[in-house]
Image (cartoon, rainbow, N blue to C red; front, side):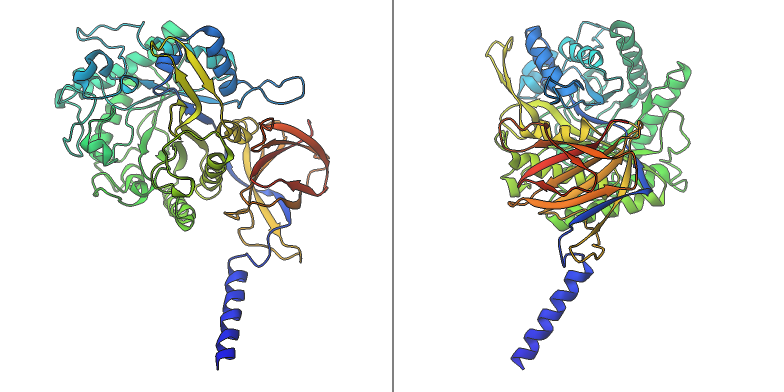
Length: 527
């Protein structure tokens, strides 16, 4: 009887392995050019909160940082100088900096200036460091810009602060200031263009309005809001933009958690079910699907949904199912490492190694493959001793100078952003094991190989392969395109010199070995 039970257990395990496509690891990847998926738009990061200080450092140091973030040029050996971000996020400040300690925001790094002044006039010399980086980005080819706000100006808030200070989950915007807030946003769009030559293509008037952290404060600028408050505000902004002939797109809602987008999580119905609330015509009080300047697009942050591994996949599937039901597109617009990301020790302490870089690469892969994100955006471009920056700053006590350090996270994001350009189309990838059998979800071994494929608008093919495993892996890949005769690899690993380092070219169908704990992007020969 014991042997019989053991046999049943073994057969059951084999059945599970076959069912979930893990009987054998994938050894061949076939890019299916007949199965286009989402069109990619941008990879990005934000200037919060560091650029207001670092943007006033000596110019040579600003240039170095800007090259790392925005450059699409290569060095003499063909190695990229930077990661080629294609959109830049600008934090429109609410005015907490002028309040100092009275702002109840402890860190001066997290307080921001505001263009609007107490007398109702505008000071276009404010936020100078951040505006310097707008220009540095544009000089290096970035031509898309997004302005986002954590709070309305302090002059418009109920408590006179940019932080919520435990008011609860409703908006801190005063009842008599909704119209003024809409005018302020239009003024910012027009003012920055007039003074800096930068047009904001997108504006995001709310940031994590459903986040429970936003209800308690004080820590940083923030403003909670219900779906009805969001809809009311967005309609007024839309009308103001239409009246001024502004084509800037108004984006919603930068949710703090994917689960609030299709359900509720640590909140109630007033702040949850956001996709349904804003894009189901039956939601008469909150429907925005026919509102001018509001695209059929939802923005969300992937915090708290990256572990356990089953949730990493399932949350994104649930999100995608609801997005598809209401025919809505999706951008992932902010994430960094948080306390629940225990696989890499949580968010504390900067990590320049592949440990964090690979963990984030796996998040990117799942957001693109399962949630079908069209854009993927990191939180802060530069941070301190925490896993929230692509670059680490070491600032002098007078804040006028300092030094910076890059990270493997920066360059692994570059494995995507540098080569997958706006307008690229993600293509399906079919996989087979060593016996030639199709492997279900073979493009996603969560602790092994993960791959995704794209075709740029210039017809060039791009294949990104993550090897999360502690052993090297060998496989072949191909695409049915006679012009893709060879592939150039760019590898990022823990080796000091391997930051998008060009490696040997591959001929069509040639086996490739990806080292352990590395990310490699393969780009087809120039067309």
